Length: 366
Image (tube, rainbow, N blue to C red; front, side):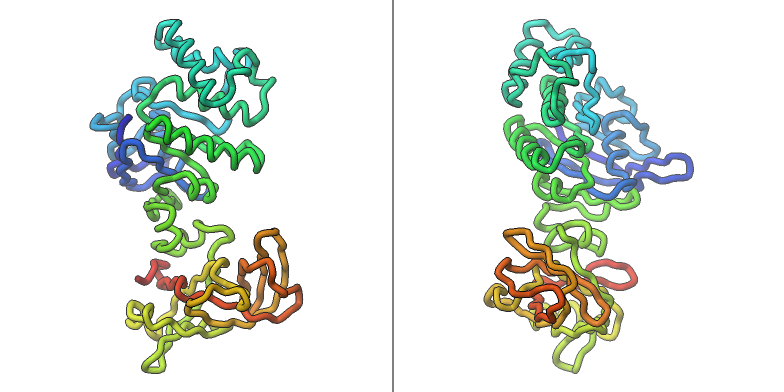
């Protein structure tokens, strides 16, 4: 078990900067998730930590030990890959035991560790099978089991669930989270799926174009994103954005999108007053856009009239695709809504949860 530190870490491939000045301190036993779109630098960061890529600038520490020049096999880490990387000619047992045999671990200790890991993962009955005889979910468990038997200080996981179907992914997310709690080991996990990140990580590091955008708890990222990218990436469906201008009649403050105008609640207005007359970006999440009949009580709401273009019934909720004066946005509403395609409906926006970003910098205005 160990902490992990990235200290001003940069990785270049020729003229391409894959990771730029990354600074992160990951606590012992933490579950940190790197999340972001393809090419953002998350996997490269993980591979530098594993020793599979050289660091161009900066330092990486595991505990108090500088590991820049330490071979992968001596870093006390175990990695689970997206492809699982199982040896097809070996049984499940031999796949899980292979790394221990290379380290000359005694045979009886290997047997104990493999069987204990298999029991934890519910794959005892598969130990004599070959990988081709396993389902995707079973292969994923074998790959995790191969990492567990190592008893590493740090677990590294590079999109290990991306090859599973939707139902198995939900189940596997819960299994990995449970495993983290049982093992009490540092987990560092890479994914492009923000749902995985939100449900599994104690903290999430959001990356874009090799640059760390924000690192914080899932709830803080959701409630207080630092910029437009984080606001749009975290949450599903993603946040609605409108180009707007902040205006004032001397007393009250308004957000004017051109398509509609809403009054800023008095308790939220103070940080925005210095920006009156400036162009901003107004953000509101679909789950904060309600059918007025079923809106939560006690919220500061603004009613916006919009036309329903698409109606998606999901059982526990309805997603409305809406248009107002040429602007499109989404609302997640109560399934009892009477709105239907073609209707002009009122949408109650919960302005207690609105977001305003500077148009030029795209940074949140606090």
